[in-house]
Image 1 (cartoon, rainbow, N blue to C red):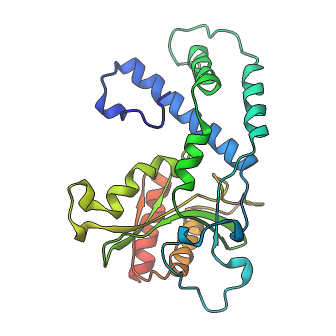
Image 2 (tube, rainbow, N blue to C red):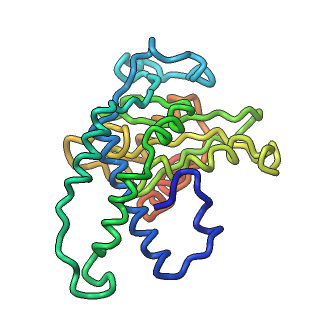
Amino acid sequence: MIPDDATSPEGMMFSPSSRNVLAVISTIAVGLIFFIFAIYAHTKSTADLKRSDVSAPFAMENGLTAGDSIRPFHVDVPNDALVDLHRRLVATRWPEQETVTDRSQGVQLVTMKELVRYWQTEYDWRKCEARLNALPQFVTRIDGLDIHFIHVRSKHPNALPVILTHGWPGSIIEQLKIIGPLTDPTAYGGKAEDAFDVVIPSLPGHGFSGKPAATGWDPIRVARAWIVLMKRLGYTRFVAQGATGETLLRSRWLCRRLRD
């Protein structure tokens, strides 16, 4: 597993087999991050948060209720939860060794053991938590469900708003590294006119967003929710990005809806 501050795999030399192992480990690790997020995440009240976390006032919809308002969000996983996770990792009951030397029977035992070893001895959740809390995070209720999102406004005027949608399995953590280049391109060799205001929501049932109580949150419904979110933030014109098949579908639907 690659630590949060490690060099990107694209800049390193790996054999094909090691790349495959890293891909599997990364996918499973993201799933475990979801598990921590969903079980142990807690919000702090607005009074506990500095108002400076909010980059600019929000333009609310007419008739927006208190339950649908945009509330600041802060990650604070109890230490007991992390201790319990470590205890359960140590107590892992391993299956028997697979009967083949490749991945034709699924994820290999050696890969799973390496993943658990990494989570036991190397992974630092508090470091990840601090990265999230250094960014403006919020929650708002849309269509009966709490939606968690990061919202970073560019310092450059006339920045183009963009909403970024992660895939499954995946999370907003995958997109933290691109916030700087998008919101402040001049610091990365770009031009001010290339700047974006960045909105990164957690999909329903993922990360810190609420868990749907019923089916129906398909790509189109999520896209509708994203339109509501962007309007609440005061954006009437924006672009959308999707990294997988479903998120690309959401992005295409958003574009058609906004064009119409």
